[in-house]
Length: 470
Image (cartoon, rainbow, N blue to C red; front, side, top):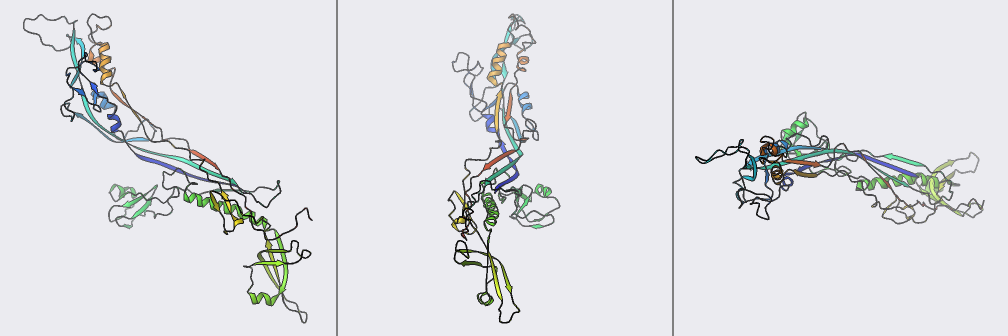
């Protein structure tokens, strides 16, 4: 018997990802001491202060703030992530626990014709082509960013095995097939569903949709479960008694419910083999009074023994399939009872032991071994998460401006507007880039589990002659 069984369901991935710490970790410690300091990344106006690690600093605050996604926006379209919390707060550089942070960095150079400067009385007006050293303001932020992710992935898990008749020696014997499909194993069939216009007490657990919910207060439900949740009457409960252990379950056949279903399949497949083995019928008559005295019925199993001439093999036993009473009108005759049994010609040998064994009667010949399928783990689904990247931190911004700022008569750097440091800075805005693992819109996952099972032996209830002996 070739058996194929399919379980399919929608696996739910849902949860929250707090990216706040990951964003802070993008900003390393920066030494803003003088350029002569070998540990300094760039020159600065406050040589005694270091920008502490994890301090979100930028020279382009507006661009940084605009680049952080708003609440309700999705990340990369249908990736499966939505922003549920966004808090972006400017922080006074004097109010950090590590001590005051530098308020500016530099130097960079611009034209004195574009920047305010101070000269002493009587001092000649400087050449506007002469470079003028200025500093760039550093802005600090606290950022909280939390994403929610939700995705449903179709899973299909197929087990297949061939259960052989150990008593069959014909290599050309036909193989029948049994194809079954389970009900949706992700649905909680045990927990009581939520109903409208029903009284609920605090602590009551009810199933609605994919999840189980716990009543938060005494109430009578409205006509809308969503409205009741919004009113604070329900909160998500941990209880979930579905076969896969919850909507996020990744396997069915490996669960206790799946193993029990597999046992049922083996027994179902063994039944036609058992019926095929019960192909030998025997019939004999006994006095009617013996039947009455013993309470004999078709619920019994009977055994007959005789010599080989009358009964090939000398014995047979099996389930009583019919009991016929016949009476004769002849004088001096008595009613006769005719008994017919059907006997199995299985091997009667013990079934093989294995990692998993199943049988209906508990007899050794009824045992079928199922090999463990640890070598066929479920295909991993998409893993929620991702990486945050920093584009153009303070050190990068300053280095770019210093490489392109105004230097007077230096060719290519003598345009007071094009080489204005604040204009140059616009080309390197600070951005936080989120590269999240795609979980939404994924193709379905299918696992095929070929199982090795031992043959079903069946009982030896008679000893008919083999075809070679006939």
